[in-house]
Amino acid sequence: MADEEDVEKEHPHAVETVSFPLDRMSVARFRETFPRARWSDALQAWTVPGKTARRRIDRWLAAEASRKAPFDDERGRDAYEFEPILSSYLSVSDRGFRIRTPFSRTVVEELRQIPFARWNGEDKCWEVPFAFYDDLQRRWEAIEAAAKRNEPEERRKRAQARKGTEEEARSKQKSLERRRRRIPLPSNHLPPLERPVATAAYGIIVITEVTGELVDPEEIAERHPNAGAEHIWAGWRLATLEELVHTWPARAAPAAEERERGWWQPTLEELRDARRAARSRERRREKKAAP
Image (cartoon, rainbow, N blue to C red; front, side, top):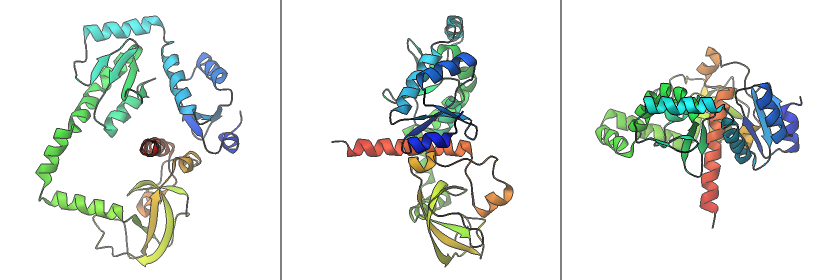
């Protein structure tokens, strides 16, 4: 099969990735629906070109989930009726379960582990087919606990409790440091400019400039504990979705020395999370720009 790079050359501004449980028939149906899709060994996922690729992929995943044997769906329905999840965060529709919670990275990470779970952007909820009720039930305790922690009232309570404490002062300092868009880097091992790199402090970012200004290790010890006298300041910005799509992942997790220096080539999982966040930022910008 052609490599992902071939797809990106044809469609440099719109390439989406998708992975799903592989079997011969599923792959055949996928190739029939997406004839220009290509498999990437590096990403361990299919790449699909086109500005509407994300919507088409979501529709295909929903249709594919409904292909599960009726017996599996019935078994999931029966399991729910026998031992239901009783929660205000979960409801039942004709197609399966719907989960609406306050935003939580833990919730998102848990739901992503369930086969064919998908985000419904129009209704702003996650959808899980009946056939995967057992998977949902196993993860529900973590999902519900994270959702409760992120309820607005609970967040306000925690914020109120932190007022005037050392924890609040640290939090404010952390926010202030982030707004400065600067990061200490080892002067003898600088990352490439204008290319996404993963960092311990700010996730995947793009280094825009190296100022050459020496850092004061004691001043930033709490926020950047690995910074030393040989570190210098560099400016950074968030990576765009296009940049993240074009970034190839590292073949292995970062070594200890890479983490210690503060930056490394991002892994596939890191890139996937960053791409989702970048898509959300782009959607918010588009909504604000819409008349």
